[in-house]
Image (cartoon, rainbow, N blue to C red):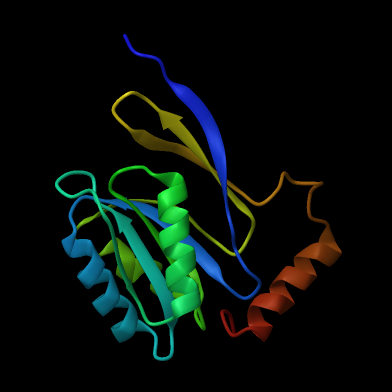
Length: 163
C-alpha cells in the first residue's frame, strides 16, 4: 500500500470572473468546450485548460481572452490532476453555460462553478493527483431571516433571473 498526501491549493478568482472546475476524459473536450461556449453566450470571454492524463501529458488549452487563458493554465498546473479542466469566464455566469457543459460528451464531473474564493483539496499518490473535494467560499454565519429572504427575492428579479 502506498502513501497518500492530502493538501489544498488556492485557485485565484478575480473580481468579475467565475471559475468552473471539472473532470473530462479526452482531449477532444478542449475543442468541444470552445464550441459550446462561443455558441451559447454571445460575448463570453474565457480561458480553458485541460490536464492530459497520458501520452504527452500536456496542459491543452483554448481561449479568447489572454488573461483568462493564463489563469486557466496556471490553475490547471497547480491542481496537477489528470483529466482535470479549469474554465474561467467573464461576461457570463455559470448558470448561462452549465447545462451546455453537462451535455459535452467527454465531461464526467463538475466540481465547482463560482465567483467565490476556491480551494481544491488534492490527494497525491506515487502515481499522480486527484481532486477529492472543493472548498467554495466560506462557512455560513447564520440562517436567513425575513429581510434576507426579501433581498434574495428582489435580487433575482433585479438581475433578470426571475419575474
